Image (tube, rainbow, N blue to C red; front, side):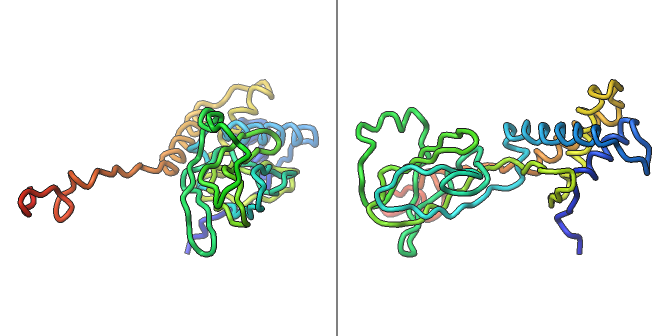
Length: 240
């Protein structure tokens, strides 16, 4: 069986990228300064993909314990909720209380601003608003719950940066090549060499393939009045 995940270090990908643009040959190793420059370019590339939702391969789920009478939480590596900082909150999020799930609405800034009294405390929150501050995002629930409950927060999060050249990352299939070829296209100008045509073409194609794989096709729903069968409209007891 093929393992759908592959482990690789930052240096592994940097060395491959340098070879693709002809700076090094197989078996040669970048200098310390070149490796550090490569790591900076790699993390900058991953940063830029945070703004491209289709480069995020799967939604993430955080179970957040909401405290009674508390409406605001910070999400991030140094937040009140320690987790990777979300880029976008998804509508699939919900409140769980005593084994029952309750839907919540993901609010825009304007919708939240229209709430006249934001300090309201009530049974369970029915609205959440997320401000993607940095380094920690700010999550507000409305109203503040009167008792403890759990927010099941679905979100999109950026790929994790590499802390060091030896940092190991486990990537889904297709991501290693996409990162390496796009990194090579970034490193070429910094090393004053042209981007090989095949490298530039592969970088574009690999990224396009990943986006197509990560695309979720929306399912259209229809009002019950226009559905066929037992759900269609009737006249004198007969389906129309």
